[in-house]
Image (cartoon, rainbow, N blue to C red; front, top):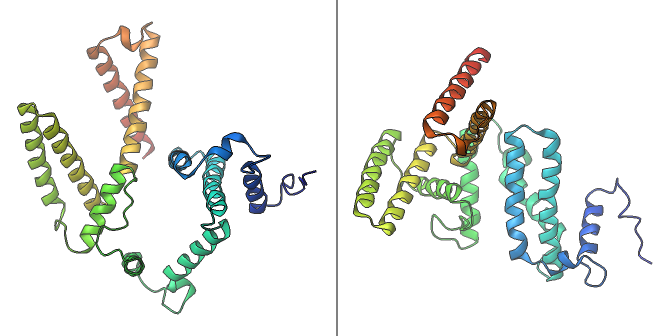
Length: 277
C-alpha cells in the first residue's frame, strides 16, 4: 500500500510538492495526462504561467499572486521531474545551480567587494559577470544566448541591449525618433506598392525601432504594451456599459457613437487621475 504521509503533510514544503510530482509521473500509478507529457508539451504552459504571474502583479491582485507563483513553481518542478527521469539533472541540481549563480553574481553581498556603489555600477558589474559566464559557455557572439522563443518585443529589447554593450547604439533618443520617421515612410512605400512581404518586413522594422525608443526612454516595451492593453480593455468595457444603458450593443451602434463615448470615458479617467494626483 502506498504511503501517503508526505502527500498529506501540509507543512512538508517543497519536499511534498516534489513527491506529488513524482507520483503524478509514476508510469504505473500516476495520472495518464501527466505521464504522456514532455518538455515540448509543457513549455507553453510554463510561458502562460509566467504571464499570469505578471498579470496578477499588474493588477495588484496579491491573493491571486500566491496561487500564480505556485503554478509557476509547479512548472519548474514538472520540468525537473522529467529531467530526472531522463537522467539529465534533478530539482536539487536546479536549486544548487541557481544558488551558486546568485552567490557568484553578488560578490558585494556574499564576498569581499564593497557595497558602496550605485545601482548603475552594480548593473554594469552584473553584465560583466554574465559576459564572463557566456564566454565560459563558448558563446562568442554578442547576441549569443538570447533565447529565440522569447516574446518578440522582449527579445528585441534584449537583442538591442546586448548590441548596445558593444557600442552598436544611437547616442540618444533623438536619433531613434528620426529613425522612426524614416521607417514609417518606408512602411508607407511598401503599402503603396501592395507588396505583402515588404509590408510585413517594414512593419517589423518600425516595431523594432519603437522598442529601441522605449529602451532609450527607460521603458520596458512588454510592460508598456500590457498597460495599454489593460487601458483599452477598461475603456472599451465602459463604452459597452454606456451603450447598454441606451439599450444597444456595439454591433448595433456605429463608429461615431462609440468614438464619442470613448472620448467621454477617456476624459473622465483623466479628470479622476488629476483629482487623485
